[in-house]
Picture: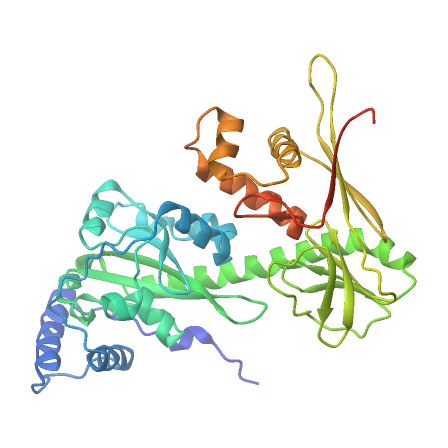
Length: 414
């Protein structure tokens, strides 16, 4: 039986043995003819031709400088990074592609599914050159914004792409080459973003496309394995609780993926409402359900009575002259309880939130933790980690425990 090999679709812009300078000259003539409506001396590759046609129909001008100041503010950039689903594989992408950026000529970029640049790394020399194109963190590098490029065109075509010199729609990009590979959610197949390696056109190499493509596939494998580990961890916590349940119930992660079930028809995923918190909800195919928090997910119980379940959170703070020890947080619901022993910083944050039920801003948490109000990036990163563990028990805008959660702040002896 013949197996499908996705790498067979990879088409590098320049092949081994080609002279990049001569090829760049031909491409420039092809680009000039295509943009002016004249007779082209050669046909562009299909992925490039399709992109140029889309952009001409959209009315983009190849002679307009594509550098843009429409970049995200730091707070929005941090939120995009958190929601991208790519944060846990950024380091793996950098390690896999280190050989391409180690010489200082290329820049490594990771974008989200809309083409926004979320992370980039490289030497100061190449970063400065990228700055001149507006190729900075927070910039919009979608095809409709800056023309044919490896990020935007990979998103539009759904395939790994190498774009060399005058294959770029915008003339200001003709001195560059870029190679991008899409990264998809292994659970759903939805686009998460693109990993891209870009640099001066003279640095192009035909093997770059295959390497970037392979590293993107490895990142997808890492995401798949991380998802399985999280479900296994959730299943270990939920199994004894489900064993005691008198009625139908499921344990799901924060995205609704099912880790364990009891007297419910097996299914891979539940569709959960946005901004889910503990309490009574309606779930398609299950009806009214009571939701309780689990570490990294939710316990969803099919409701039997009209009385909704309540969630109680007890934050126990260590006491004594030294103030040593760890804050412990116990989450109690109708089906049982579980306890999490916090790191000192996370314990400090949760204690602070328990003392301010009205909610606090990132700047206020920064002042509490560090004595200054400008370390909000660190605060948001810590809150993101806490919310991964406690799910909908913690809310943002402002940061607080969710409405309806019964929060008690006690010392360790109470």
